Length: 260
Image (cartoon, rainbow, N blue to C red; front, side, top):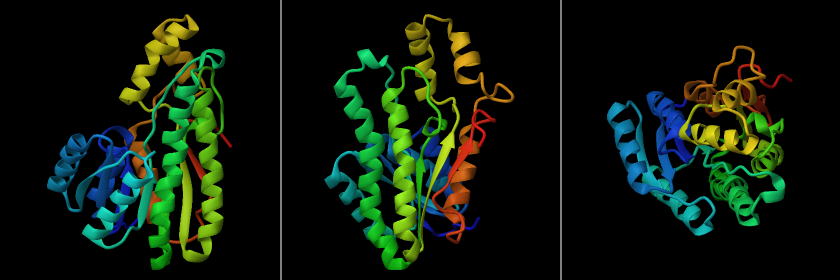
């Protein structure tokens, strides 16, 4: 897929899956705004990507739950590069509790980052995509957009919600050449997932090894984690696909954990 010279914004891109997508985009000649809460980390990632080339990257400080920060970040990208072709709404967190012990403040925090963040970034970029008559919006869902697991009421709710948002955006954006799709990874061994292993072991009263082998990878076909590279290749496909033939879709990347 050709994304050379396309201007892309990736949220939560200073590390993890977001950084992996940014790397693949820059390797394919794109201009990438590395948007993250931590500007110093975003700058370090952007500098590393620009040095690698052949594309380039710039850091953006962005709290995706803050409308003013989102709008300011989008304006900075427009000022630097003049347009926006791709949005990857990737920023996210994980908080786990049994539902009867789930603090309402944690529920609201998680939903704000995943859902408010996806809405605010979409709202900010889509007028500029409409002006150009093209664009790709990619939401980072999860197998939990289609399945459920214990202890993850807020996360599962948020990831299900992204499917609805993508489908509405795909219908509203179609006449303007704007596509919207969802990537649904299985467990990717990032710091976010590694943190969950001891947490789930404690909450479920089982060994950490059992969390990995039974809870996380038990339904896969080969007991393997999905990789950042796996997810990044799907993000490249969605960014570069040229027509509405591929819009409103959720593509599962999970070693067979979920099969449609």
